[in-house]
Length: 455
Ligand code: TRP
Image (cartoon, rainbow, N blue to C red):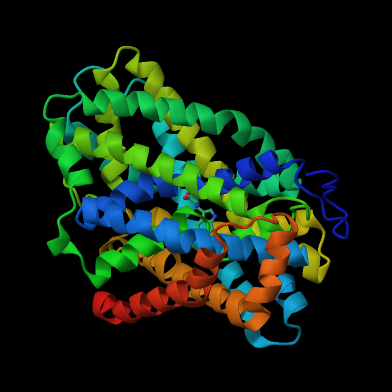
């Protein structure tokens, strides 16, 4: 952003260039959602059939909702609450913004704990935990002993939250643009190398089949709900992140291609991560497909000893995963902070540290929910938070955003704003169909299934 002076809330900055925006938005989108959450959801929801629904969801719904968020943000140049208010003053629709703030803080509270695990694994890898004869029994024990130790986890959680808060307190520019530009491409290259090794392990074939050959008998409302939830989560949709990022976009930019690139990069990283996890899981057996939050942490270290220089690759991997997580935690905290800065005229520093502290408090039960506290572990506190905020609330937010863009603001006005930076909007009919009919209808149907799933 140009001129992102932290203490001058009236002066809203802009991204330096269109590319800078694509990198920043991809930085938000690419994170634990791609490498930790995506494989975990694939493993819990039947493999390839989930992948298929997910890809369709990104292409036909995620892309449309992303464009809607970006166009609302850029048109109003405001945080989600202010943006809705600018378009429909004095209406209840600004609740979309408040819901987004709540959802963002709640997602961040457990997301930053898992981001802390990634840093913890970086330290372990440096210490040589994954050298020599690494078995799935060993990685499972290591995961349990690490995550059930609240003191260790707390240190890394506080580190991640502190860094996030510090970067946000200094303004968006200093943080996101610079990091993502260099580090995301390196992460991608690293994933490709690991995937290449995983795919050539003896016995990898079963994993590839599980990942790529859909079993249509497994298709259910539950699969669709979780695949759509994953699409929204991974693309950072449904809570105003992309609205906020869009609000820092200059009018001349082409929103359509920006949204397209972000969807493409984000899915590419997630799909590549799956090409590491599933071949490895089947080639080196012992980890259960529904291992949940531990899946990636238990499977990935198995592949490092299989490649020359694996020690260095392991370190690089967890270092980059930590950075990828950080560019996402930043975007989660930016939404509430932008609200207090824009609408309440708070100094950026105050908004950042207060919101950061509240998030930290909310994260404590998640720290304790992996063995340290019996009750929180038994009720699967982190899983519940992820279900409520990472699936249901995001889907509900995306539903409201679609309806707001299509019917309250109106497709015509939205199109005018989109086309101001893109006179040849080839996908226009597709977008209109999706935002008016497909997205709201599909989301309503999946929200209906929640009763059967949660009940
Ligand atoms: N998309 C990020 C990931 O995949 C997480 C994230 C950042 C997010 N901002 C968000 C999720 C907003 C939902 C909404 O890791």
